[in-house]
Image 1 (cartoon, helix red, strand yellow):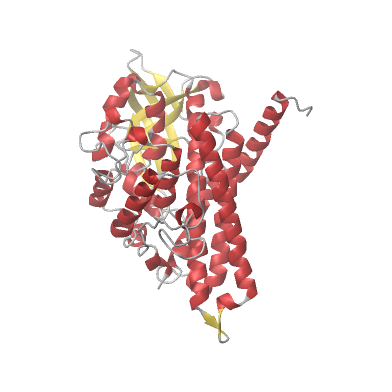
Image 2 (spheres, one colour):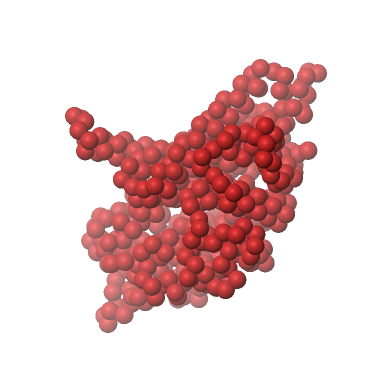
Length: 450
């Protein structure tokens, strides 16, 4: 069985016996330990229902087609509508903004969960399961709403929420996030896109360029960092810019190495008139709102890295038991077993760290002052992990790990996708420095003489 076919032929039945495989792929380390081996205090029946229902949906509707969609660079719009109708999208949008028929996660009767029932471990389960979707197909299905919508949900006015959130479920609205520019990415305080008030104060006139904007081709709106004041972080605001049929807006796709179906684009803004009522929060106070997005974004990226590493690990392990060299299967060689065990150790340790952080968020919230350094480090660790896993898997697959499609096709895809996971959300160099500085500040607050 090829590594790609294993992704959509896994067992979703549940067993109450801790000594038997209870879920998913029985290959060692193919699933998080709570799914089929170790007892955990973090999960209950609702997490199991969400996991099982989501796995079944992806295996039936997405996994068999995802590499074809990725190669084409687009997900069929009917599949995006099906995904949104499934109830798995926008799980964290409050119930009062959800249209009739979208009250339950996974559809009526599927999980029994409503938006108000969800905790951080439901998010962990969802991100882990959807990270099995390779390439940029996940963005093609759901858009970049996961990063474009939270500023509205968390900081928007009631009128803004009523205007934009219900349409997410029917594809009437779709958001992306416009932060990165050609001249700067991690340094948000250095953005150059300007937004100047019109003479009558009714609108902002926006000019500038945003680059590598995920999901832009299908977005109706872009939650955008703009400069409304002076230099530095104190002059930044957040503005929701309509993209469709808006004079002055030009969107051009960028040909990146991977995540082709994610639609990363260059968005040019030339004297774009944006209603002043589209301002999120207060003028010149947008930097803090952007920063509140990062802990969660980095956590989500770290979970995605962990699952991508698992995919590489389990695919290579199966191949090592099928491929023969010099009359022996690859797995009979100690050096191959050590490669796999080394990756497995890193994957399992990283997952335990993610669970610890999820528990802390559950108790203290996403803006807990102790979180920023650890979210930075867990994202860096996840990126290094998927780099290691992809490299070792390709070593085991040999030429098959370098060929698109077929045996090793998922590993080859991940080898191209992973650069986005390494650089996106903050580069390793920026995040390591952030973590050091944040920990130093915390230590000094608690009395360390440093």
